[in-house]
Length: 280
Length: 248
Image 1 (cartoon, chains in turn blue, purple):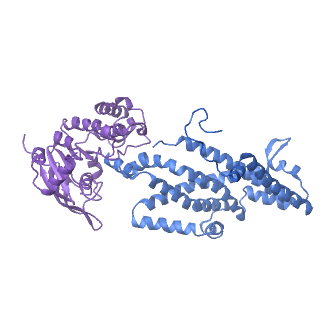
Image 2 (cartoon, chains in turn blue, purple):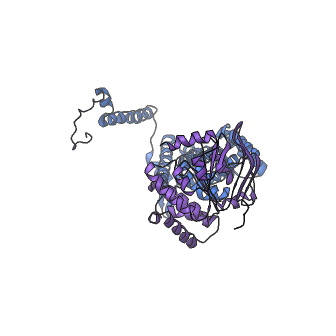
Image 3 (cartoon, chains in turn yellow, green):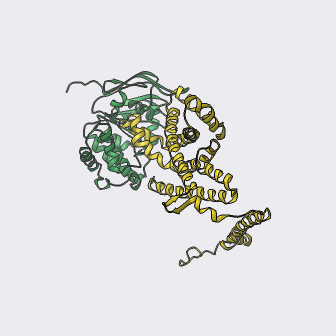
């Protein structure tokens, strides 16, 4: 539709972009290109599987998700795994938030020692691969402090993400205008009160977008604790495959489950974001 | 009335930003209920001076005593002292996530521990005084600049302070909003509160000031009552400055 159709204009219409640009960016052409790509991927994987004589057993999948027996409705193995993934990620995220706040405040405290401790923690966590952290927390710190693999996975994920979270918090706190600090000080607020009533409520809208990204990242990186055999979604998937050899169906299913969980998480997050928008 | 001790007293105060000397050898006194207007070219240290009074900046040498309390970095008394000193900023610095009413009551409620109803009664009283009682439920962003600055003035009044500091309160305003803010400040001047204003509004200064101060390059060049200050300033620098801004 042309802009301002119902109005009258004295000026001539501005020149159109070149025809090739208009053709490529038109909706039907984009749609066709998109469908061709999706079809290409599906077709090649299907024919590839046919060629290697893969025996598709999609009918086997539902029982791993739920079953309806004489005992009534029951969740299947994959759903139990998903539940562990969710509780694991959730607990780890809460812990990561707590550590993240601590590190961010240490860094912002202005105390020489506080800043140094925070920076060394950040540098250590950021420069060690997550997989190595998992091994470290389970095989080294586990026996030393006598905790099980579930605790190890929570601690490890929390520590890894707390580094990222603390940077998000620090940036969000610094994004609040300096004048807010001065105004709060000038009405006699202490540093704690200023954070609580003035700075943090305003920084929420700066931290929410990257923080939801971090929550999604947490759910995804929780899959890595399958290397220490914590019974979450990925681990249970591997177990089923080693029993049934249905690698294609199970991995597709697991990818879809992660996908849906994360889409739901993102929708929820954008709702929360809307609530905290402040007009400036 | 007997001569009271000064409520603000600078004694040979120096302030440095790195190697740059923002204040040099400032000695000046403000008496209770005095209305002092500080002017001078930009970068002359007038904002720094006023911000030292409530400890937003810390001086490096000399002595600064406000309401009987010596001010220094890390002083425990400064937080309590700030309750006695209201400040109005050039950029208003209202809390954008709170309504006008909440902007006014958060200080009394959280800092002075006044009850919510009491704080709201007081807040409405001061909103009345700055002539915007109908804006109480709005957010700062919904108000014009002049209204925002009047809310900021009401916010500092709500702390029932003894001293009010104004740091170029009209410099960020559209010309047609300056007067509504100045009018409120003139009315305040009549209440007997101690006022220290950094401003270029010479009409306002002539109307309310007890003392005029001219600063340049971190030094106080001239201190005089307004009639003398405007008619025959002693220093050439001050004369030149006044000619510049009074021309228009």
